[in-house]
Image (cartoon, rainbow, N blue to C red; front, side, top):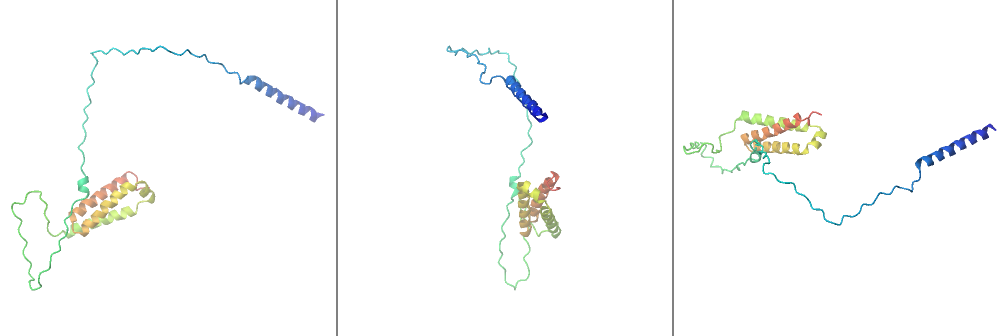
Length: 194
């Protein structure tokens, strides 16, 4: 009897809750109708605001831009091709004295230059080698994220190696310095210290 009474109470409670829910929700199929506005058939004239002649003129701001950097021409310097000099007979061991520079050479004109300084060559070789080591030490994640920047660095580094191998010490130094500065910038931005 106790089980029967317990079931009856549960059933009654469930029916009461269902009835309350239906009563609180109301009828869903009856929605309030919005009043329909009559259509506008006559054109409505637009008013333009009056233009006053005393409108304040705002002066244009003066913007001082920095000079445009020009690095494209310095990125790939032109190099002279090596000329193959035919060997003279072995009977003339003495070398001809170099011709003196003419007085008419303009200031700033490029010359072939003399023999490269061995110390400068060694410094450039060390710089190129240190750049290679730093590039190889970069984490793979950085290489993937900064691919464009690293490709630029590798390009300058490769050109510097080629210039040094061809005897162009100044060109090698310039290109290696560019690669080093770009690599320093990459590491300063946090690309190399992960």
